[in-house]
Image (cartoon, rainbow, N blue to C red; front, side):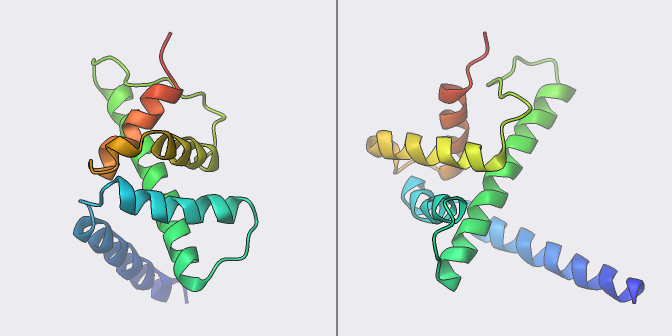
Length: 127
């Protein structure tokens, strides 16, 4: 049974990577929509299947960006972009991001991945 799980998990990972790659150019408007569903999920609101998929996508994307930046910061000699405390959860990160998007509607035309980082730089400055 365990041997069967490995190909299934690998297929799921590959599908997820393909979905992220195909949609890597989402702008802030798309992120605001998807990540607003994540905030609803965090607030225990009832979601449609589509909203649940958007919420899970957003949570995974934001966590991936944060993890990626952390890895780069720890393995390179460059200055940290932001200094997020270790106990900040992915949910908190999503809430910070959504609030920042709502507070900066003039930036929504920009790439969502850049906006995630901009929101963290603003919320978690290094001292």
